[in-house]
Image (cartoon, rainbow, N blue to C red; front, side):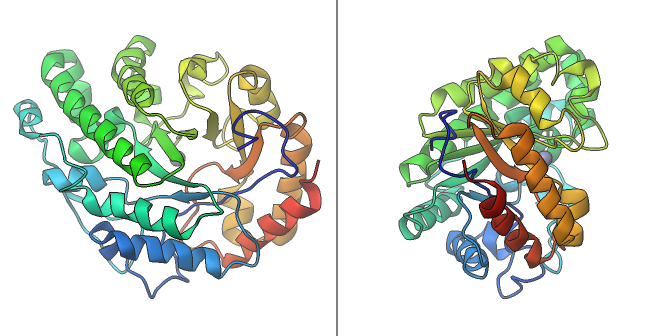
Length: 345
Ligand SMILES: [Zn+2]
């Protein structure tokens, strides 16, 4: 909590997050069932923490990120506990389909996802728990509709698109408030997933269709931890249009930012640009050292991240995005061990 306030803690905290239980060593639990049963999801997270040798400082819960579109009728194919469930059908196919959405009820359609928060906050009293909330524009592009649908409607029928975004936003606010009321300490607010907005939207379009709705959600929520993930993919990243380094993200009302510092803008540079506004989280390389279980490389990553970003506080170790399903368990332990070795102030 000191780090969230941009203060110096006793030690640099760490956390690693994946699509639990969609990892090779939690096969007793079902990723598909976790999207229908809040207790299954909660138990899988507790099981994950229990088998690690080192205690994380924060638990970030990551549901299937199309859990809201599923309730509106989009279809996805879950198979063999794999984290990727490919899209079979989206509820919004034509412009007029934005009319088909309604505000989801956290006590009805989204009840099980709220219940995960309730169980985890009850059983994990000594660890902050945050829940993942995808931004409205990302839901509209990935799951409710498609990137092509959104890009076309921005030009041809922006009022229909805005109507859809209003419903998604209202749903997101109601759901997030319910998670906080159920005991969650905060949110992990994901923007940019899928990556295309960074490349295909102009800055005025980002201001209106991404930030505009994000601000509505974030301003409506009162909680201790607002951590924002700025996602990048091969389809696009905030390197495009120089967004990260121009300080475009400074306007977001959040406590902490997280991004793939190995892909764009290393930690020390970001801390110069954003350090007076946000705590920062990153420095673990999920693609190389973590995924491979390369213990000396993980130690070196942690040491370098601490040297470059920990001074003065406001820094947490974390991956740049959700870790891979096949990442070995020893990588978690290596991060925990290295945080103790290098992270004390
Ligand atoms: Zn990401």
